Structure formats: C-alpha cells, structure tokens
Image (cartoon, rainbow, N blue to C red; front, side):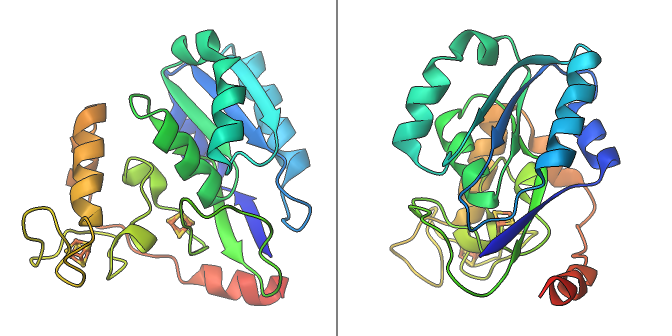
Length: 209
Ligand code: SF4
Ligand code: SF4
C-alpha cells in the first residue's frame, strides 16, 4: 500500500506560476490513500484563478494504454496548457511524462510507502515511494529508480556512451534526465543547488504506520 500526500501549497504555486495548466487527478486504486478533499480544494482554487485549461479526473493513469485513450479526448485542452499538473503517485506522474514528452509535467504529490499489498500498478514505470518526489527537477524521470545508485544529483563519473557503469546494458538514468530536460528547454533546473533530502519524511511514515 502507499500514501500520496499533496506537496505544500507554496511548491505547487511556484511550479505553476504564470502558467496555464491541465490537471490530471487520479483517484487511485482502492488500496492507495489519495488526498481527495485537499486535491479538490486545490483544483477549485486554481480554476477560480483562471489557470486551468481542463481537468481529467480518472483512475489507473499508471496504465499507459488507458491513459493514452483518455488523454486523446482532452488533446485541445492539453495543447492550450503550458504544463500538466498530476495529482497521483510517482508511477502515474511518470506515465503521463512518458506520454507527453514535449510538455512539462509536474508532480503535485509526494509518495510514501506502507507495508502490504501494493495495488495493481503495471510497473512499466517504477517508483520507490521515496517520500520526497524529485520528478519536478528531473523532467518526469525518477532518479531513484532510473539510476543504479539512486543519485539525486547525477550523473556520476562512471557513465560511458550513455550507459550505466553498474549495468552496461542499462541506459544511464541521468543521461536520460539530461536529454529530457534539454528537450523541454529546462536545463536551467540542473543549476539549482543540490537538493537535500528531507529525512523527516521517514518519521511521518512511521507515524502513519
Ligand atoms: S522521486 Fe521516484 S521514488 Fe521518489 S516519489 Fe518520485 S517517482 Fe517515487
Ligand atoms: S552511470 Fe548513470 S545510472 Fe549508472 S550509477 Fe552513474 S549516474 Fe546512475
């Protein structure tokens, strides 16, 4: 099981500042806690501010085939948006980012682990439920699962010809992140000071358990 929790409001406001956004709101599978009330309040507020081009409320956005069909119905609203804001677990955000490669895709939630059944996620994309989602700094590619060392400030010095030094069959996750950010014109993100992980999230998880 996992818990998704909205990032703090300041973070979400700064991500969407001056932008028109399309919102994807995943109700999630039954085993997953989702902050429905807070998510609705946030969307109502953004809609009242005239920032929203459209909202897709659905479930299982982690399924790429289902997601593609659903997004096709909102193609015009997505085209009119500068960015897509996704309220879901880390797998859902990565699935959207994988489909909308030319559009900035932002994670509005952090994902925390809980023991037990993990739902029916198809796992085409992986999320380690790290409790502090980095996808907004990495072009929607998870550095925890796409990099063999789970570096949050890669790449390491071992990458050769785009391959990972730990597994030469695997593409270096940080090369993928660099290419995605370049494609989006967001390489400036890499100039940010190193992001320090907030280990207090572990404490919050313990409390939730
Ligand atoms: S950074 Fe990766 S592991 Fe952490 S919550 Fe986001 S998708 Fe999951
Ligand atoms: S080569 Fe790339 S994927 Fe492999 S550990 Fe280094 S940064 Fe991570």
